Image (cartoon, rainbow, N blue to C red; front, top):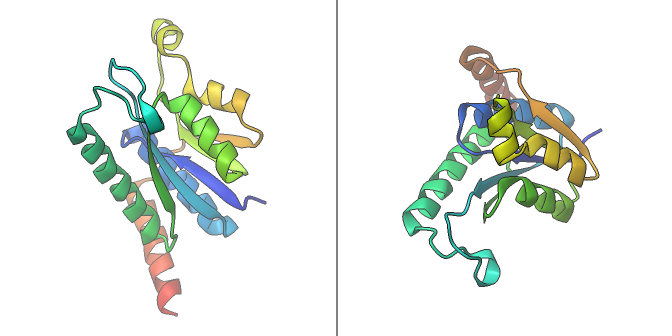
Length: 161
């Protein structure tokens, strides 16, 4: 059913829920996995090639490390995700990358917000669902560490067989 799954991962608890749920689904579907981390811009202006003035190299390095941790999680299941770090507003970048790679499914986490927070920052899931031509999974079902470890152990056993 799904051949190309984009997993949006920001390192948060909700992002980990999305990563685990999306990676398990990709494993079961035999889908290609694309892992995307978006570093929101600081107050600054866009310069050439999508680089933002004011984005500190430490922030970029930190997000790269975070992205690599996400890749490591997916690899534990036997997946070989393509990874990508973007700088920009998360929801539009997720939508643009989903279109670019021809995603069948986008998986994002869900962070509960009060009305003021939602008004101020908007909803990533809502934006993505309005701007992509594929299914969107808003992951809310946390996979426990124990259950995820069982999946990892099963994947490792499959690789050895």
